Image 1: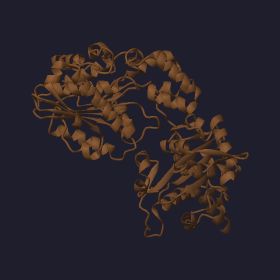
Image 2: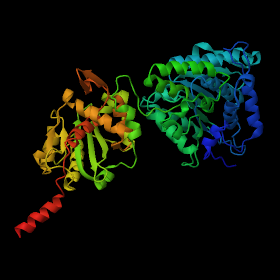
Image 3: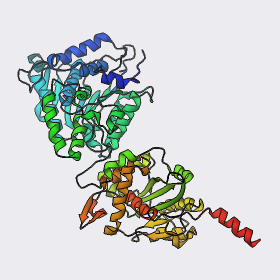
Image 4: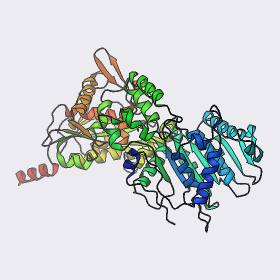
Length: 570
């Protein structure tokens, strides 16, 4: 039997309201048995305690059938060993997950097998255990077969000795057992926890010794740009769904609007008639009138709250974590992005470039921005990169997972700050290499081509001098309130489309971190206003923007200048 999880026509399937679980060659008897056990369980916290057969939707029953109907009879190997389920809040994720794990405990034939249900927080773990224990208590037969040990948050199958333990996700606890099956609820809340990916990998490793082992992740979209383990798992699931990865071990079930609907400036996801497509439990645990009222309140509270609401209740992915005192350019940043804008594109298409540099402390980023002016359209194009000492992963643990993401995506380079043989630190050398490349291409102005904050960049200035870049090419850009015109000007050019960028995740993050404040008639975006969040790549852009605003002309190719000089001498 061959199991393929790709769903190339998933957009049409979703919009038609059909199951997102593809047709699979299941063992129908086992799939039906699992569905029957699942359907028999009661909802303990609903008046009348209806069974899941009455209350649950087929959308989740299809997941249950796929997991438990996929064991190869000849080899004992489960052909659907993993599921990644993305579904909005209030669609019975925790309740359905508890029922699925109880189904596993009842169907299991391995003596003394261990199963686990992980919550990202103590509160969610407690809710999950309340659902599990409540389902057992609501059925007299189950109450006889299963022993609930409340103080250990564990349920024991008296016949097989198998256990289901509900616990908070923790590295020491999660890696302490070899589980025949596990479920992790609300992964998005663990996106910033550095060890999450490593622990998930170890949990999946149990399949080497237990061929029927499975692991399930059920989560809502994050209320800020996806990061860390959540981003990695979501990206992988999308790649499987879209057919970019073959022979996958994860069944993706993603209730999210097509990207075009999420990014369309008209925001079609706002239309209530479209909501049912991503709310599989609508009419059961989700009430459309209540949801509509809740959304109206969120929208009245402003753009930031609307985005947060949409991320949680409609799985709209947030590209920029907007906030009330955000830089006004953040509202237009996403729309100004284009993946065609690379450093190579700028060097090939632009007649002049300015460079902005900012940052560089041991717990900081060293941000570099290259801003080019197109030789025909005169539109401005931005490319950026950053460097960081590897120690920042310990000094700033709260953003470590994001920084590692940026490294994988090619926007950030980690270095070990130590003097090299030629005297330059690796980050300083990296900045100088790019600046020298632009200089030798003749794209820097003779004067004021490299904009810097005069504080704390002595090492960079020394290295640029060694590369024979003239001092006149380096200019100190006024900071603080004197940068107000640049801050306003950059926002305006983003909105009118005359400033484009490479749509890179690191820059989107830096932009989302930027807090603005009004002092008199001046608008400031400063590190002090932004707190511990990193905005160095954005300040680098502002520095380059200031110099480009002076309407510079490129000095011309150094190779051509040398040729002309030699010709005159001859």
